[in-house]
Length: 599
Image (cartoon, rainbow, N blue to C red; front, top):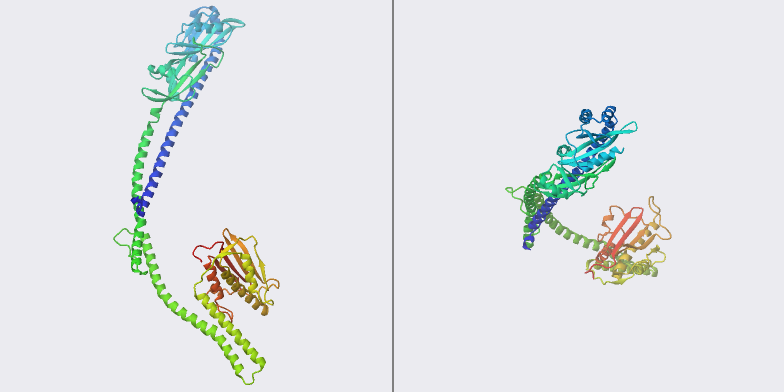
């Protein structure tokens, strides 16, 4: 698309999109985290409310059970019950009911006839009430649920004995009705409903929801329910009877069910405000990120545009010294743009200076190289030849003198021919003829050629026979190795001909020169030539590959220069590592297949 053809647009769109995505992800994750936390808190609070309700109800009922046993064992109550006179029993029953704070206290004779009852709840006139008292008159403690209009009574009935004779029963009940629900609601901060036998008996919610709440009975997991005034989460908890022999309601149930509800709509209402704040923050953040992204894009591409315009002018005019205009003082001061312009202008100034210096150095260098070759490399052999010719012209020349003079002339002519050949090899471009070659065989051939003098320094071969074939110019590479090995032999030979010097490593009579091949890495091999010669001085080491640089009287200084041209032309590298008195190592690295364009 055309919109992405501009670097400014790409940077702007990329940074803006990244900022929007980061903000969107952050807002989304924040919303999810806050909502999940609120939901978890709501459900955890609901379950804790159910546990608290059950524990409170159980504790309260166990308290009334203990009080009923204590009252049934009191002597004054037993004496009053033994009279069978209700007016005598009634005051005592009312007094004990007030002391223990129960909702109902019932006293009967041994036959189950009610002698007295006290409390805010009357005695229901149902068969299961009589069944509960009847079990107590049989000498057994009984626990029962007595439903009545507006609630349910949890009742414990205990027998009262005088010695071993049953004199009556005492029943104590605690009511689960609207008043109790109000206390539980304040205690648990939840809506509460009590159900018995599948019917809601009392609830803190509107009675018209009782049928809906009845459908939640038995659901122990947290459930969501819709009521008129909003959405609720609810949990059902059975309140099991904890003591005695339970006698259920007419439906046959022996436990009452508590329904605990909390308004999800009200509890999560604060999330709407949180979501609105996050949305507003996200909108402003996106706008700010968009503007900032555009500013960043413009800041990055403005100096690039200035450089591009300058480089177009350089390409059109061919003037590599053209300067980039300095950033305008009236615009926003961009330190990076100013630094870039200054660096670019410094580069063009350096190019101009280097062009002038290079032209001057090239003229001087050409003249110097030519004069060096002529004066040093050609003049010396000519002087030797001239001296030999004078010997030949002498009237008293002897046959031995003539032969010596001829030998000198022949040697110097060969030397002049070698100098001319090396100069031509270095000056003209090298044309490589690439073919597959065995690097080990090539190394052996080069060592044999360099070791032509049997009395000279021996060369030991340490070759890796697992090397694969190498695509190279075998003849050129052989010439480079011969030059390097010849230099090594000259270095070792000079050491062996001199007197020992302090600090020099003594040459090994067995192998002062070692030629080794190794696999360097995947796709590359290496050749090492190590000698035990005197080494190269630290100040001379950077110049060993310079043309015409030599420390030998008869050297041309072109051997290593030609070798480097060959190695680099084959796509490899050559380096020299040497320390005075420690010998020298020449390291060559070559690719198994040179890059295209080397032939």
